[in-house]
Image (cartoon, rainbow, N blue to C red; front, side, top):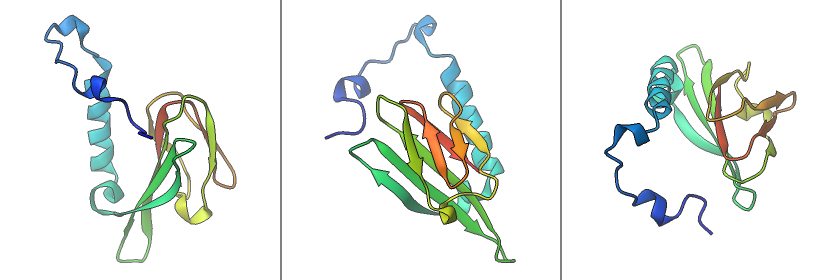
Amino acid sequence: MALFGGDAEVRRDMPWDQSQWDADLPRFYKGLIRLRLAQPALRHGQRRTVYLDASRGLYAYLRERYHDAGLATRVVVVFNLSGQAQTVTLLADALPVAATCLVTTGAAPEVAPGGVITLAAGTGVALG
């Protein structure tokens, strides 16, 4: 079972007519670049999977960078690749202290105490 789109989507020809381009996509990528530059854990941190449930289309990983004082900078990224809203519960050691939404690909997720995160269908979020 593939988790991502079929071959037809990735092999589609480039639409050279600029009126067909998704103008929001370059802005989104520029925002991701700014986020990476602002978060040391995204540039230099170690990555580990903290949640995976392929049958539900859920995946989460943690990027973590330790500083000289032993403190960690953390960013957790969670994806809901399914066609419906999903809730995932992450262990406390996988969450950043504040768990603030840094970027999302859709509606802002619900982040509840205890590491409970609810994501809309087909969305992802970075929490830091």
